[in-house]
Length: 118
Image (cartoon, rainbow, N blue to C red; front, side):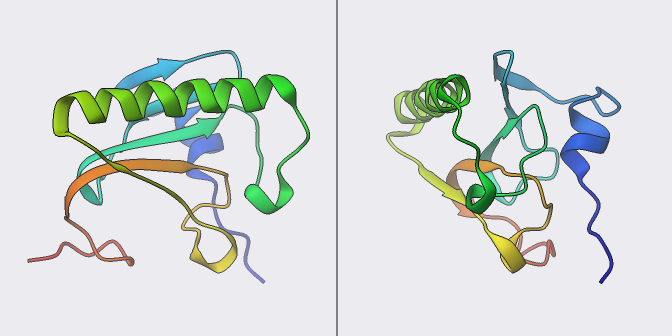
């Protein structure tokens, strides 16, 4: 089985690709998606490799930081747009085998496979 590349560990966390950061702690990074699937789309990731929620470690600090990020970003979206959605993919639904939460609002711009919706 071919191992999927980890865009977040390989590009985002080491700063090889510039991202528009909206929230950051020692443990967590939230930024505008580099290739958004929705009109407004923020990604929240741990700064260490965790494959998905099914392999999530027991970490009080990581829990605190994740919920601080989610609270900050969802409040930002609620204030600006009236509401939003939060989602995370597991297993075969993941395009990157690195835990990530999406906070999104507005019409979908891309299909699950990444193709633009016309």
